[in-house]
Image 1 (cartoon, rainbow, N blue to C red):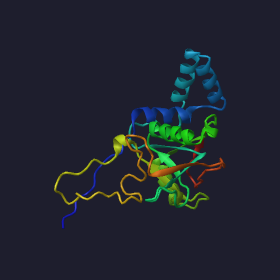
Image 2 (spheres, helix red, strand yellow):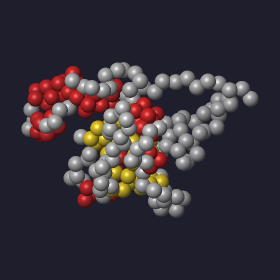
Image 3 (spheres, rainbow, N blue to C red):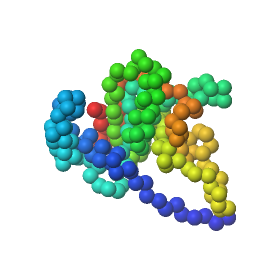
Image 4 (cartoon, rainbow, N blue to C red):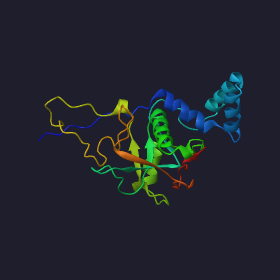
Length: 212
């Protein structure tokens, strides 16, 4: 049996990369001012705040090798069994796309309308830093996270007769972790509220999750 080296580069969506860059450049008070400018609306002020944040960003300034991962602190997911009942420990979903994160949050509020007016606490961490955190002592158990992959980045059926013709998705993680399918049905998971806001992972020499 021959083996082939795996060579690939994980490249973030340009909009998500810019969004992460802006988040790291926001100063205390900028979020409230930006919300006010959008609601007024005051387009010049909103653009000025966004441009200033992008120019003063302390992360995600490179086109490659910085992968933003987004999460919402108040939300957890659990896999469903064949009967459709949620099983296992609640897991914090991380998203590689803000669109997927928004879809997941909307699905959550649709099933839990009491949280419709709640302000989501966005958390942001760079993928490589998260991996480093996993390898250091931490108060946060990284076994309780799951990646929800964007629908445009899921595996397509492999029709070629190669050594890698089998899917790696074993329904417990595999290639896709937990799927957010193109129909956004979320039939394979249960989305639940999580009250505590303290979801930080500290590691020596690395930034904690950014809380907005």
